[in-house]
Image 1 (spheres, rainbow, N blue to C red):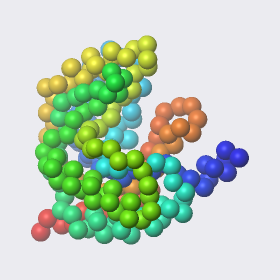
Image 2 (tube, rainbow, N blue to C red):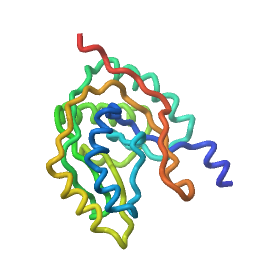
Image 3 (cartoon, helix red, strand yellow):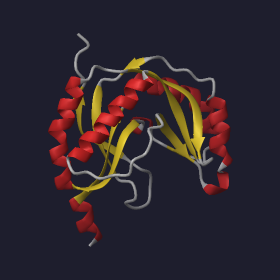
Length: 194
């Protein structure tokens, strides 16, 4: 039965992905923390993303109708200029990097994505956008690790980069042991800046 459920549903969200050189810049700043806190569950650098709308577990049939309107939404938007900045934590266990740059534009884009999803029948909890990029999770016994690493990232300021694509992403979260892995279902370029 579980295999049947897995084949008919997918866990999805809409996100932005920093370019590789911006991610590498942050990874470089994290190298001492990787060594000092090996028990943290570090997200793979290729999976780093900024979530605009977490849509949850959807029937596969509900995902396809989202593709054309998401493509149109991306084409209507000019790219945003963002940067990875500082660090913080949720509940002393989830470590994240903050987002700088056109945060107001990011909030507006997230609102449009959420409206679009709801207009196409996807019901998901409303959460205020707290722009961030999740880096790691600590185990309960090591809860202060995220707090300590976040303090070390407080002065980090990455270079400004331009968003290139809007991503519809699927994940294996909650589907067995092991790390969470993400894969693009599809991605669409933002409109040209002219």
